[in-house]
Amino acid sequence: MKVLSRHTSELDELGYTLLPSWAPAELLAELRATVSRLYEIEGEKAGSEFRMEPGCLRLANLVDKGAVFERVIAAPELLGLVEHVIGPDYKLSSLNGRTALPGCLPQPLHADMGGVTDERGNWVCNIIWMLDAYTPDNGPLRVVPGSHRWRRLPQTDLADLRASHPAEKLVTAPAGSVVVMNAHLWHGGVDNRTQGHRTALHAFYCRRDKPQQQYQKQLIRPEVQATFSNEIRHLLALDDPRNDELAQSTMARSGFLPDRPRAF
Ligand SMILES: O=C(O)CCC(=O)C(=O)O
Image (cartoon, rainbow, N blue to C red; front, side, top):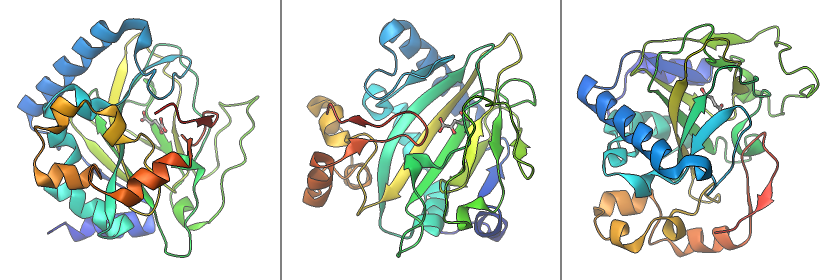
């Protein structure tokens, strides 16, 4: 898969790369409409298949909830960047939505799944799709460039979530932009100091020898699974006995929210 060398160098050096205004307008509009509809339908239960987060709305298990999300998880250029980070042996770990509500607190800096690189290297990659613009005030992403190579996790003072890391940078960009991130990078959403909502999708991938954050085979309804192409089935590890075994034996992990046993 052909990917731009600027993005691959940024992923190597900084641990993330921004693709400004990347999503076509019609896709962005459909994603925004679908996410709003899901929040309305799911109400207080939104996000409950995985985690709730104070000050935010969340959605989980999105591949089950609209064919439009297949375009998010399987965009060829973006998968080329996932492959650059993790190698060719990757699968989707989860697809979630997250809306930072007015007044929400910053997330602690974290690495996704609480993971550092292992003897085979990187094993997590996250793609953030900005359905709203990320501005300095509405709860954008902060990152600590280069921290994906440090092989340790941030020590966060939970009593002072607003404390900034001396090397952190805010990632801001127009709606429709996409950030591809080596998810060992120290990162987190910051506080939303505006009156507006700020929504993003997180398409999260992991190496195939690691457990999925959300066990897609059990979460996605059989009638939806029946519509998938072979490519999507492979990406979701629906026919992969090793993935079934991994799902039996692990906790559902986020990176900063407490671990809990898998309910599914
Ligand atoms: O919503 C964002 O921009 C970042 C959120 C994040 O890092 C997370 O939920 O792990």
